[in-house]
Structure formats: C-alpha cells, structure tokens
Image (cartoon, rainbow, N blue to C red; front, side, top):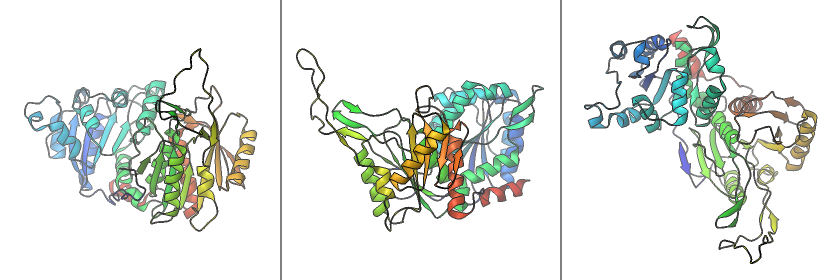
Length: 444
C-alpha cells in the first residue's frame, strides 16, 4: 500500500496474475478443520506455491508439525521463543519472507486475538509484524460464528483489510448443521489467487477511482476543533472493494483510527479545504482521468471564520466566546461539475436523520440533482442507529431511474455490492476474476 501526501505518488505495484512462485505463510490454528490444512498445503504446492507452515498450540492438538513439514517440504514453526529461530529474529523473517499469509482454520479464538492485536505466540506475533495481505478461513461452531463478539471481531479485521473466505454451511464436527465449516481447499486457493492476482484482471481493471472517507476537522484554535462522528469505515471499505475489482484507487481520508486499505494509494488530510484541494488535483491534474468518484466522507459544512493562533481562554466571569462560521467548499459538487475532466460516474453519500425509506429516497434525489452527481446513497444516521462508528449500514440508492432499498448489512457488504454495481454500469460485467477462476479449475 502507499501513503502519500501527493496524489501523483506512484500507484501500488500490480498484483500477481498467477500463484506460481508465490510464497504463502500458512498459520494453522486449533480446530478439527486443521486436518484440511494438510490437503491445502499439498494442493498449494501443486500450483507452484511455496508453503511455510506455522502451527499453533491449539492446531498441534489436531495435527502434528511433522505432518505439515513433510507435505510442505520445509520446517514447520511452532515456538515464539526458540533459541535457534529467534537468535535470527525468526518471527520478523517469517513475517517478511512471504507474499501472503493464510490462516486456515481461523478459530474464533484466533480471530479474537488478531482483532485485539495480541502477540502472545508465534502466529499472532508474525501477524502483527507483517505488512503482507492476510486471508482468513474461519471454522467454528455455528453459534460461535453467529455470536456478536465474533461478528464484531470479523468487522474489525475486515476494516483493516483482512480478506475472508467462507465459512460454508453443512454438517459440523460437533454434530450440528449450519454455518461454520471451513471453506473447501479449492475455494481457499481461488480466494488466494483473487487476493494476489485477481485485481489485474478484474472488471474495473484499467479504470481509476477516487474515494473520500472519514470526517473532516475544522480548527477553532490549536487544541479545539469542530468535527463529526464519522469513523471512515464505509469509505475505507468502498476503496478496498474497488481496488479488489481492479480499479487503480486513491483514497482521500480525514482523520480516522483505521489502517489504510491494502492496494490503495491513501492521501491523509484534516480539513474540508484540504480534502477539496486533493480531490481537485486528482480530477484536474492527474496523469490519468478519473473514471469513478465516490464521496463517502462526512465533510464539515462550516468552519470557524477565523481560527485563533493561540488557545482561547475563558473570559473573567465566564461566558463562551462568539464563534463566527463560514461555509466550506462543497467537495462533491466541485468534482461533479460539468467539464472535460468530470469522472464518468460520480456517487455521493447522504447522511440523513430520516428513517423512512421513501423520505430518504426523496432527500437523495434532491441531493443528486443539486450536486450534479449520478447516484446518491442515503443512509439513516439518526440517534440509535449506530451507523456512525458502527459495523453495519442501511442504504437507499437512487440513480435518477430506479430506487433501491438495501437491507441492513455490514459496511463491507455494502461496499462490495456498490463496487459490483459500479462495474456493471461502466463495463457491463460484475463477475469475479479470471485468475481466481483459473486457480479454482486447476485444483478442482
């Protein structure tokens, strides 16, 4: 990923088109599905992947390090505090000497430790020390999978750019039937191919995208500012989803507590004016024209007319200082304005405090016409909805022809649905990646 202050920063390196020669670090955590990891090692090697296994203490209850090492053709690591391995900073080397980390099976316990940023064994330490893409294949009892804590952990991992494959439904080892089965080996391999190489052949390959995300903050004085409750989860998820479908994506983000999405060039700003300047440079000064622009940021409408250079002090006897406001630039309207460099598809978000879908659609259509954008996604952010800062969202989309009332779903799912709708509108295709399909055929 790239962090840049300049929109002209180098784009992310193109992903691999095949799995041949890829180095995978395979973390095997505790669960009966660990037996499938042995088959995964074998099938990965069949398609030219070099596999380095790491076995957790829980995983070692179900399979042996010897079995994993025999199939991988290399040592299976198990201990964080190994006198020989750690003398060479083994966990750092493992974290760097790979192209992809796969966690299969990913137990509920492993996902919780990943979400919490723990580093109490070799597997979690490697994960925390790595900047490589991560793919997890959850496997657990259906009730554990559906538990609020697990779903919160899943949302946290996805917000950090972790890819997820599965789980599937069917008979579980506990004797119950439901969701929780680890994805089958060919599906995991296809997901790995998609994560590493699919973007190069995705339906949005060759197109450029701009996404805004998060809040803006408007200084009152050096220690105080005006802002809003936006977490940036939705905008970051949209940027990641567009990149997964092949778009060369730039994210302009206000201050958030989120990792930059993988495969996305990220420009960090604070104020609405800084966001407007960055977006205008991308629209009018970029080497390549923008094809897609999605405005998910909650941009402050107003700012203090004058920001004090020194901290404002309470007056004797108390009383609040007068705070004069002036209007901020309208970032969406600036980029959506007619002209040769206008993106082909401009999409706005509208945060409203109206729960009724009909009213949301009316407000969205009004904004769409006023801002000269093509689509608007309205969402209800009234008190009690937990949209701001939460993991879920409910969308009403208008495009001037139809109105779509989407059910409540995770922000990641909203982003995926929007990205595929964009792909369908611009290219006539919202299908999966050719490289993923080829990998699936190769191991089926």
